[in-house]
Length: 392
Image (cartoon, rainbow, N blue to C red; front, top):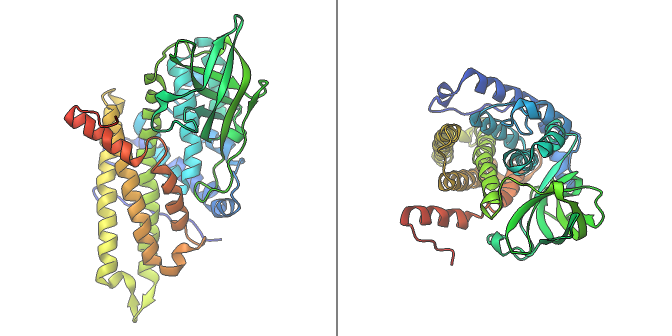
């Protein structure tokens, strides 16, 4: 079993922009990833199995709802701390980071932001501790980039709501104890409902045969006349803006996380290039390999500065949806390119499970699509700078 020798690149001294608390949070998360994730993740990815034993450790390190106030079980940290945690966890594996993103930004965040006090007290501490695993139901078989067209709906039956429909491509679904589900009422208005495991008619079939996010549990949420108590409706906000605000938080975490995957690929390629001898010298001494490595560290450095600035804006309540979209799109794009170039530096060894690069590359093919596709994020930027939407 290969040791995790990762060393974080910091070409522009971005660490000088971080507080001591930020560095401590990052160090604790990195140590946990090196100890608990790196030794097992290749095996779980090869088996296409979800390492459920990591859930408790993720909770203990504070990765579930780190910015949720302590009174509800969170760590009360700022947004840069959250970003750094996602960076370190995705450096280990995108699928493990997906578990955290869903739990934190797509389940805990809407309950905290839009839930009643009773809902917060009932669900948030158990989600923070890992006792409950959550999922987020927005995407449907026929409505991905256009969630406003959803057909999942609920009717007021007097003493409860009756929920029908289906969601797909749902991370954590097969193991979820609770799901924050977005559905239309009889007037066509979108609301969030908390659906709990065990409610009659609620099933979560697992999605198999994935080449990407193989160590992450993906499935569907199916609702067949599910009776949802009225107290499980999120009262604080309705309309499409409610789930989209959750996606802003998740995309922010991805913007940091994908940089972690890029860092891991770069660090692996740099170390390999220094050690691999061809033509009587390390391949790191050849111009084309140096070109690859120099371009990698340049893109990582630019992305580090972008996500740090975005985190500062988010802490100040100034980060816009369009700014988050730009960062998510940029981070994943550079991570994919770096993974592909790093794989070339490793030659044939790059496709094996002895190194993390091919796993990162396959994972990033999902990350580039979920939480808003690569093209949709480009159009969000286009709309923001021109004032003209190109979606229709």
